[in-house]
Length: 57
Image 1 (cartoon, rainbow, N blue to C red):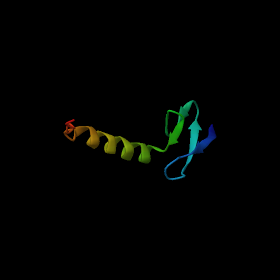
Image 2: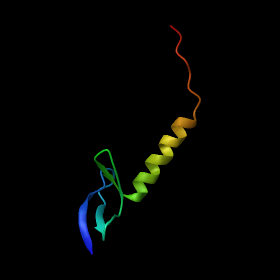
Image 3: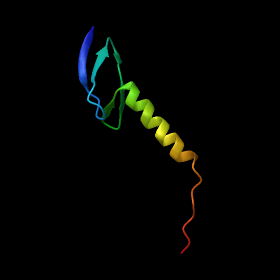
Image 4: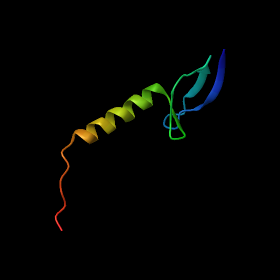
């Protein structure tokens, strides 16, 4: 059973709930397709790997 769940907030792709499983990712009230969620995860992962510079007062 496929039921419309909403659109990806990044690309607009239609996301469905298949049986009891969401065909996408819902995080903090934002719905993302798997492709956009993977891109966002990779960007965040790369950002966290960069050395942080300290600000001197």
